[in-house]
Amino acid sequence: MKKIALFIVMLFSCIIPVQASTNASITIELQDSIDNLSKENVEFEIVQVAKYEDGYYVLNEEFQDLNVDLNKELKAEQIEELCNVIKKKSVEGVKVKTNQEGIVKISNVEKGMYFIDPIDISEYDNISSMLVSVPEWEMNELIYDVVVYPKHSPFEKFILKKVDKDTKHEILDLFEFTSYKDADCKEKMRSYKGNGTISILMRDQIMYLKETKAPKGYVLSNRVICVEMKDGALYVDGKKLDSNVFEFENKKNHVPTGIEYHGNIYVTMSLIALVIILHIINKKLRK
Image (cartoon, rainbow, N blue to C red):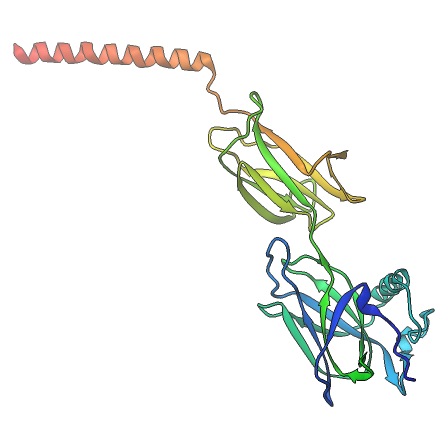
């Protein structure tokens, strides 16, 4: 009996058999995300880990040190650990990108076990690495063309809410924040615009946020906050958030009362002077 007993699809992907052909192929197809993110230009690297010879997987030379028998059924924890070990190896593979529909096909694939690693998720969800075997058994038949649906998960959302410093009421006006890699705000990453709130996907484990456009009638804040994703929780400036919402306060752009008062006096005096001058001119014209 031919031994292909590695059930990779149970943890990392869902493999659907296609009609068998002489030339093997692997098709990667991304599923829709919760936030309907773009599936285009997601880049994968595909590395052959083992060859398929006489019904058995034989590890390639670069992976001979792997302490694993690919011809036996592995547990989910073992598969995950194996993917982490392979990921650390500097073995160059074939790089491919998805099209607008989130699909990419690799044709003329040699029989064997392949490690598929997302190296650039572009604007898509977080994607898990996976192992795929070619061919696969389906109803006692070897399938040489497989389609894989990589396991994906949404990023945590950080919601920044603008509130008035004095009233604590939400500020419903357009504003903008920019994220940076460093606390000095020199290495720019992305800009975010919102009205009242902005929602930021935590694609990076840590970022620094600074206001780059204040709501109308409010002072532009020079505060820089450090947002960090750690152990499955959100932190702002080292303090763990109870929820994913953080209130950012802004001061109103008040004109000091003294200036307003003196300004009104000056305006009034100017108007009186103007009336007097016009009255004098009018008298002279009459004479």
